[in-house]
Amino acid sequence: MNTILMLGAIAAAQCPIGQCSNREQGTGDRVQQAITKSISAVPYSLPPVPYYWLRINDCNQYALYSSTTGQQVGTYDAEGDRFCRWFAQSKTWSRPEKPPIDPPTRQTAGAIQKGPVSKYVITADGERFPIDETGAINFGVYPSPPGTEGHAVGRVGDEPRDEPPGQKLRLTVIGPKESRQAVLEDVKRSPQLADLAKSFLLSNFGPNDWQVRNGGYVTTGKPTIYVQAPTGKVLHRQDSYSGPDELAQALRKANESYKPEKDPNLSAPLLGLFGIPMEVWLIAAAALWLAWPRGEPS
Amino acid sequence: MIRTAALALVVLLAGQVEDGSWHAKVNGPISPTGQEIQIDLPSDHHIKNKGGSDGAGLCVFASLNHSAYWHNLAGLQDLFQWMGKYPGGGYPEKVDRMIRKKCEEAHVPVPEFINRETSDLALLERACANGHMPGVTYAFSPTGRYGGQRIAHMVSLVHAKGNEWAILDNNYPGTIEWMSREQFKRAFTGGRDKGWCVIFLSPGPPPIPVN
Image (tube, rainbow over all chains, first blue to last red; front, side, top):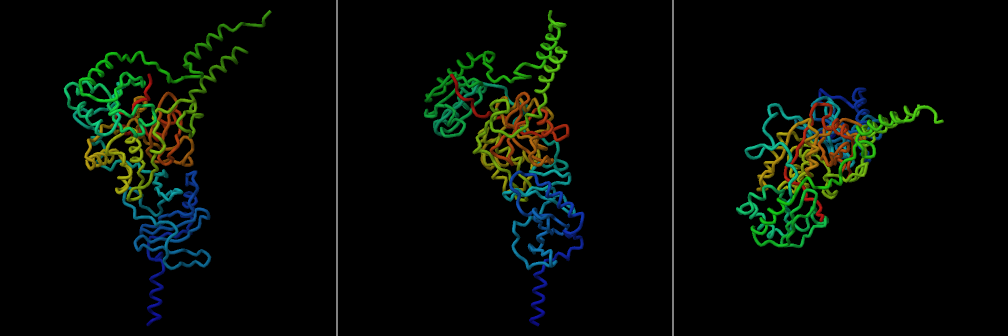
């Protein structure tokens, strides 16, 4: 009786790799080709991890392969949450043990295509991304599910805005939260500021925020308020706030005095060789051709 | 003979600049021709992509988190971390849904954003010129990352000026990949007629103050 119980226990401990009628072992040529392709498809210039999973059948069983030898190392049964090591020389399985890397989780439809073999790419830090049926590594972009395409997206308010706003004057408030809040509330609600401020791009930051920490901004005001042209030219700065009237006056002056056509363009792109447009090169070439002296000089 | 050679040399040299193949390289925030990057998100704000609760990747939300940092969007600066508890993968309607859900949970207004498939590269150029950081689809790497294999990915567009375009890839934080306009277009559309972009319409950081 004890022998029977012991044999039963050993049998239960064996990996149930033979129990799925739809199985493919890691020794078939077709799967071996997939392995080889998968190894060569590991794309990262990061150091490779030594193992990777391949789903081998529809019964949620996964083979573990060594990416250095290409040989099967073991098999994981996701249904029973069991991993057994495969000993190729003796063609035997180990008792259930912990896999050398985290076993794959059950995949939901849409994330991994069903089929006899699915593939992953595993990064050096253990992240796992699927290779889809087209052979593309998918880092998280999927087609819209059927029936959802074309739904209104990205629309807020009555009028959808489809274009980034043009270049406006900047109104930037920097300082402790309480001092900024007073300004922001007035910009939102006060009759002197609400309409006027709409023609500015408004931002607000704490004094240690990365946007203003190292850029040469004065961050010690309570608050500091900047009005700038899109080029960065400071049109107005105040280091305290005494109410909406003073700020409204400054905004009005900045708006009136700013002439965008006078902005210097220090970062104009250079088109063509040495910054000269290609059309000019071609005209110059034609002129050179016509002007070049003909025949030998006497 | 000399005239012919001079003409050929001029045309050849001028034509060289139009061929972007020599542009594609991984570099820092300065372009191969010395231009300063348009959207310079500090590297300590770069995010490394990973999977959601079901293992599907979160590149879309990594890219949008980069944009949330850039545009200083309250309630969305932990979007990537928050998405970790949900299944991964992104598509336009899901982006719309999850941004609204996140803003609702954070009790902040939903920011305005463009979320659409387009072939209009000029839209992306204007976005970067006006200080916006688009999230854009990416079907392969012109510099040979990923072994030249096709990918289904979203990255952040950080420079789009003339023939110099650049992306911040959330699988390679801390680096900037530079390429020509044509190379970007092929990577963005992946051989289809359109790519997908998401652009927040809030302003980016203010410019450096000058007198």
